Amino acid sequence: MAIDYSQLIPNNVDLAGDRRLQRALENWQPRFLDWWKGMGPDGTLNFDVYLRTAISADANGWANFGYVKMPDYRWGIFLAGRDPNRVIAYGDNKGKPAWQEVPGELRSTLRRLIVTQGDTEPASVEQQRLLGKTAPSLYDLRNLFQVNCEEGRHLWAMVYLLHAYFGRDGREEAEMLLERHSGDPDKPRILGAFNEQTPDWLSFFMFTYFTDRDGKYQLASLAESGFDPLARSCRFMLIEEAHHMFVGESGVQRIVQRTCDLMKEHKTDDARALGAIDLPTIQKYLNFHCSVSLDLFGQEASTNAANYYTMGVKGRYLETRIEDDHVLTDATFDIDTTEGGRIVRKTVPALQALNERLRQDYLEDCARGLLRWNKAIEQAGIDFELKLPHRAFHRRIGAFSELHVSPDGKVMSEADWKVNESKWLPTGEDRAYVTSLMGPAVVEPGKFAHWIAPPARGINGQPADFEYVRFN
Ligand code: BYC
Image (cartoon, rainbow, N blue to C red; front, side, top):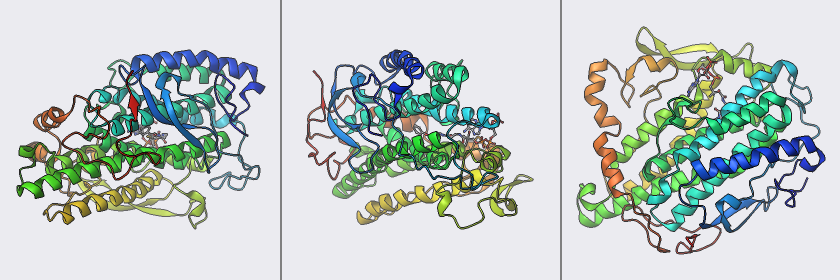
């Protein structure tokens, strides 16, 4: 179905055909806008931003670009097209038609997953609220706002499901999504990484590289859900998500490039003396964001994950492309876990290892960007390699949370960890240094902050010196 833009809430779900639902969502809309004005990008209500807006759920030509004031962004409800023949691909319900309504026995499980997913979206906007003040260029400022608007839309995607399929409970959960706030001591966001701060642009790029990539893997697993409206919502969200990870990967790439260029030009290893972000500091930020994002996959051995799979509510990454029985009752999977204070490899039932398997897929994907970053370092003739930390490093969730493990996977005492921590994770001093490079925002078209290289190309075929944001 085409997206109906004449409606208050653009949608391709025939909202006009369900007056009750339409009214409920139209009641939620002003609350969302109040939240955006209070908790979204600070001091930006009047900016004209060159934004991409979804106009169709069609893979070809699904969005258009133009100047938009962010509170006027057409947040709407877009689901990928429905396959009337879709069947559930795995678990006990394998081969049965995908559900168009929520099966009663799965109601609370599905609601919980949708709420957890929905909670991350506004959380990230809150985390990034102040970054506009220190943007390294108009190009970057626009990308930040694009990411923020689309996270807002992803919140809409989950709120639609809650309102449309979960009755009063769903409406209450939708309210709560605007009431919890990132880092709020009384009403924090649900998952750990979404209560951390994103105070500077190195953090932002690492967040969009590592944490948005968790989003990709979780959304891809939920895109396999037997609950078809959830699957279709996630499939469309994934299209938007790709740009967010691009922002992260290219952002880190440009920082690394600039640091290497300056070091080479001045023939020195002392990048900080040149006003650049030194590679060891980049590594520490990487260690932090990677480990915090690894926690988002949950426990290594999880009966929750096994139940989600068996019930047909959450599948594996690219489930239908995997060649096995898609039931997994007899299958096993090797995972790293702990025993007697050591890291050990164990064979466990595959059903219990689904979080770990997804984490594995994720880590392989993460490694690809590092290859590109390291290539830039190598081409500059600098003897340094960025590395992913060991999966047991600095974990708060899962088996490894009880151990102290170095980035290269050595288990150590708490005392030894404390001695070395400042080499592995950003210290107060590192953060102060990175913060000292930030801002005020660089607002002249085509100009970039000293510590970051310009992008290889602009957005939507526009040049890098395009006026991506007008301040009015
Ligand atoms: N923090 O059996 P386990 C995104 C809890 S990001 C706090 O392993 P499960 C985005 C867990 O709730 C993607 N608590 O849990 C990115 C459980 O509690 P109960 C977001 C945690 O359910 C950037 C207990 O520990 N989407 O889209 O298998 C910008 C046992 O754990 C955490 C989703 O997460 C944690 N990190 O796995 C914007 C998808 N981890 O049952 C957006 C939906 C675990 O003992 N969520 N716990 O009370 C899920 O699929 C699952 O909830 C999780 C956890 C994978 C997160």
